[in-house]
Length: 54
Image 1 (cartoon, rainbow, N blue to C red):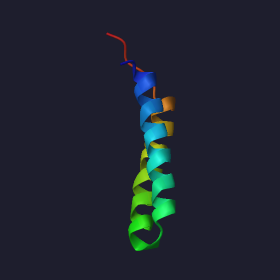
Image 2 (image 1 turned 90 degrees about the vertical axis):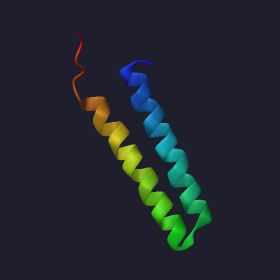
Image 3 (image 1 turned 135 degrees about the horizontal axis):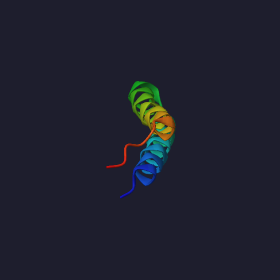
Image 4 (image 1 turned 60 degrees about the vertical axis):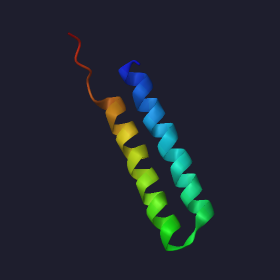
């Protein structure tokens, strides 16, 4: 899997988890939403990181 594809997969999975957390609601939902948003942030930040080619 290419690096850019991995970043998109992490971003989309994080968005899905954040959406699931919003649907669940409550304290548990807030934790799940935060976990998903952390993955979204990681996916976005990895998009801007320069790739290393060997």
